[in-house]
Image (cartoon, rainbow, N blue to C red; front, side, top):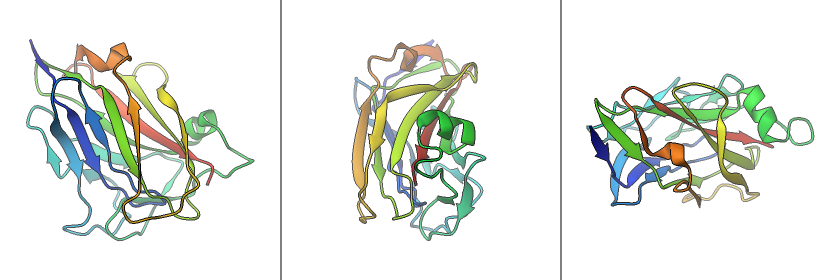
Length: 196
């Protein structure tokens, strides 16, 4: 049994009402494990899903999808969505979970590998009508409820080309520290968003 300890970096740029740049990292070195690049060739933004344009050969190619509660929307060079939950009506994490307001990707390694993740970073770029509350969550082997990672991130900043970088430390989460062979027990990560 082998253990992968890359600096699991997931670089993604989503342009929906929000742009994201994901970085998954581990405590023992930096290596990009997956990236989504929407600029070349340029996406329309309303694609049903987006396979990683770069990924480590020790993992299965991850694919980003949208939750059922949001709708694909055009936005050049991005992965866009509309119909996010509104403030004052559905304005918390549980409402976003129940309403299907998220982006999701699954990390599944090739045979007999384990993954250790010490942090996840995202570069958020929201439009005026985009959500302003974000929460990372994970689930192991698609069992049980999604477990929040860190605390809810809040921003009122509107779109700037480079976005706003946030990082959540996952090194204290035992489930994310090479505990499972992810070829048998996949890791699902979601970014929930609400308060548009």
